[in-house]
Each structure stands twice: as structure tokens, then as C-alpha cells.
Amino acid sequence: MPSLDTRKAIRLTMVKGINMTGPKGYADLIRRADPDYVEVKAYMFVGSSRMRLSLDNMPSFAEIMDFSEKINAELNYKIKDFKEDSRVILLSRD
Image (tube, rainbow, N blue to C red; front, side):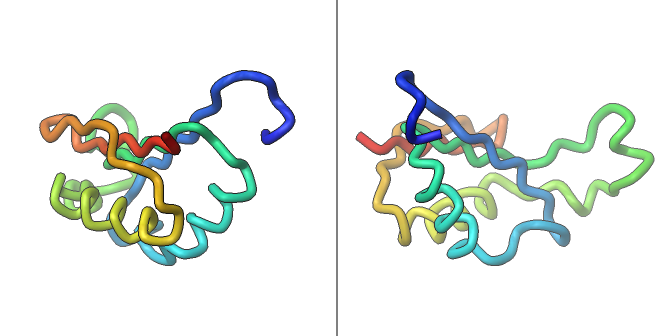
């Protein structure tokens, strides 16, 4: 992605109990991709995913904020915006 001459974004959909571990590993991958923005979003218990996952897999906004801050401790991006009811945090390189 670093060679693309455009703004770049990565979205992480976080699922409690499945992939909300290893924030340093996420930061390493994000650093390699060198995106302008990182969107850290909670899995939402909707649609056909309800057949595979449970309501317990849906992280709270506080859990998403905490995990975003752990990733960002390695990256030093800025929290550009957030939407609490959507459980999403936007990190920006500038």
C-alpha cells in the first residue's frame, strides 16, 4: 500500500473473544501498510453473523476505545474522530 498515490485507510472489525488480542501485532501490520487512516470498529450482532457469533462477541465502545489506544501506543497516530453509538474510532496519521 505505501506505493499507492492516494489516501489509504484500513478498517479493523474487532470481535470480542476472537481477535481483540495482540495490539502490537496489529500496529506492526498497520505500520507496514502505512495508511493515512485506521478505523477500529466493533463487530455488530446483526444479520447472518448472528448464526455464527453471539451478542457476547460485540465489544462495547469503551472496549474499542481501549483497544484503539493500545494499538495507537505503538503507532502514535491521533484520534481524529469517534462515534460512540457506532462503536468506532478513527485514527489519523496527521
